[in-house]
Image 1 (tube, rainbow, N blue to C red):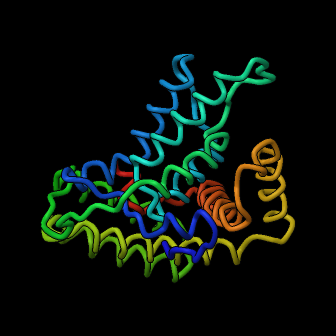
Image 2: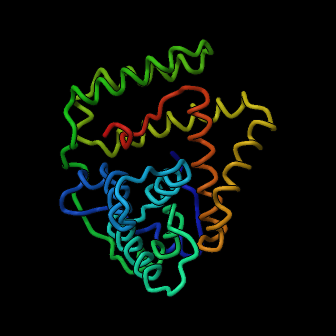
Length: 244
């Protein structure tokens, strides 16, 4: 996926990559770690994240917001919530923590790591199966462009073992292909369809708009819209984040 240029808090955080000594394990566990941490902070047992939550997490990941900063921001937001004498509503979305996350990202130093030499947290067989499944879903679309993208995914699958030596490069290739899928799906939808998706996003975002900058909202809208369009078209996510 391409990375949007952002300003304000998001721009200041964009240089901080989710890096640590155990990269890429943390890198590819980004979603899971955040989901589980939010559930623990909320303290109410199992809580299913909404499409808005997943889109927000993905926007942080694409902007390079470190995992550590997200977890710290969640804790900070809940500490502030618990300190309130009057709690009008429960925290039902990670969006409640958005401002605290970006503030934590400003305080989190970037860490160096030898990413190219790191080993992927999944086996070659898992990667091959994941890519082949994605290609099969793409093949269900008769349009030539989707057949071409499926060819590219299958070519990556055929060399899965080689790509494990540099999963960062593989992730870039897959997100580029995913961008191409989304662009072509978007072209097949009417303005009314796109408006309906944005309207749903606006309803979910309404309580949290004050906690985000205009650039954050713009990036979040894109991630939400992309995911919704892929789901409606029954097409796969290709990013390696969805392998785990």
